[in-house]
Amino acid sequence: DGGITQSPKYLFRKEGQNVTLSCEQNLNHDAMYWYRQDPGQGLRLIYYSQIVNDFQKGDIAEGYSVSREKKESFPLTVTSAQKNPTAFYLCASKGGETQYFGPGTRLLVL
Amino acid sequence: AQSVTQPDIHITVSEGASLELRCNYSYGATPYLFWYVQSPGQGLQLLLKYFSGDTLVQGIKGFEAEFKRSQSSFNLRKPSVHWSDAAEYFCAVGGTGGFKTIFGAGTRLFVKA
Image (cartoon, rainbow over all chains, first blue to last red; front, side):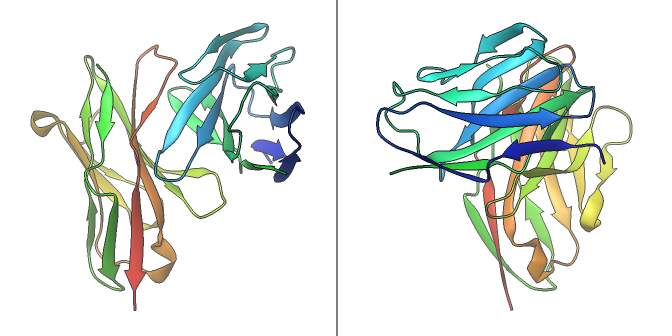
């Protein structure tokens, strides 16, 4: 089955801790994206990658980092510099002109 | 600037009634237009998309949308709403060679019995 997987479904972060959200796709798409979703604010772009070993900051990149070492994988690290990390995080990949989304990870702060 | 506006934050319709969700966009080139649906705690699912051709587009789950260039609109419709349609709906716009897709803020649909 082709698709996008995100793990874990729920993630808890302690203050000062870095956490990494996983995103994997087997759709053979070059472009991948990370969005943050807060209630009433729609989707905000954190980072995107057009190709392996390349990525660009989106609109709200501060406090986040990414890597793109493999075509299938685009992990997002929420660093301790991100002071308000509680949100729903969505990963997407793009085939043609269409973005396809994973099921999301909800990050909560302890 | 590129933008997408969904004027209605939330809409309530009765089960069996018709539905129209509004979407207006601003885009400098020929737009690619999308509607997605999101159930609580889930990712976004593509309902339909418009790239070119017939301006009335059919999607999954009985939804359709009409592209009106003169009005810069891409409204989503369904003739008879089911309780399972209760969700949040996002309109989005992209373009040829562009790597970003611009999403609207979403419209939450409530369905009453």
